[in-house]
Length: 458
Image (cartoon, rainbow, N blue to C red):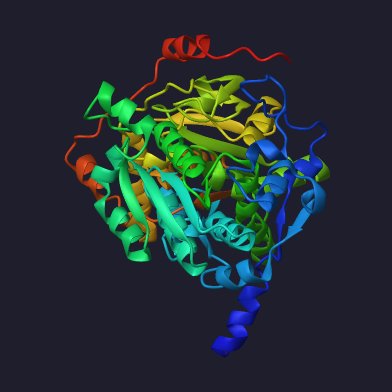
């Protein structure tokens, strides 16, 4: 088979549309509330942050109200640099576990930046460029999102400013250098560049930072700098919309493999990669009665689904965003410095919160030492060193495979390998040295944080 024919066959697996799960909800998402008026926000309230196409995608209105949203040609053309990503059966891992389960993983680490994040960074940059934006401001935890914004902004001729959570800025210097290679400007958050950052540094000059603080800084930068819009890598509805290309590809690839998953697994911090792989399978549960178990895996250090409270909260620590109903640990939450930097967030995507509240998806929290143990086992069998975030999904995939072994059932397991760990070797170094700590976030702290939130009428 020629390379050209093989490429065309592979490209046939790549969807031409994103999936809008909001079109299949029996009831709409709870409204987003303006913290000042206490009333639902409208498009004008978000215009300072996003271009109108993104705002309409967020609300699923106008041309973006349907079940499937066409991917713009300019976005599709850039996607072709790495999509479709491989669906791989982990046969060596199956053999090592001696399990009858069939384990598949979607390898999103095949993207230029090594993670799933460009799936939404590219369309966000495209819609901003089309709207006349000159500059993007954003935050990043582990650095995958910041790298993706830098990559996408460069393709569309936009400047990019990235506020990187300080502990990750220190732990992951190569991610920082990658962003600089793509042309972005990066600072550690909290920084001296914003009023919010200066306030947190005044309280603690060695502040390790959090995604909530970095979001506050990026939003402040956006609203105070001309021709600038905000790019966000997780949580928001439009982000999950763009990421559904993962699950849509996986559906086509699983069909080619002649199997359908009994279990779908993804790590979860804000919800982007998990939503991306899971939502097309959620559609099959909602519309076709499939019984697939869909499991979100979060760290015990930031257990928003398993310990959080489903209520209205701010999306950032400085409390500048609108109020959104989600499972939350409280916007004042400062996470322990675990090495899964992309999962250190206080809340969860509203779409996923609704599905969890309604029992459509499950959630489990795990400690970081067993997560790294699973990562090492995966690397030694499948030869891919996973990102610490992705290793949360691997850990539960292994657990599910061992349950299948114990019961003698042939289960089909699919998990999303959201990124490789080539820039995360400090975490592996600490694991091998026995220096990683396990953190359990106390539920008492959740109730304390929630008590200070504004009350929103139903």
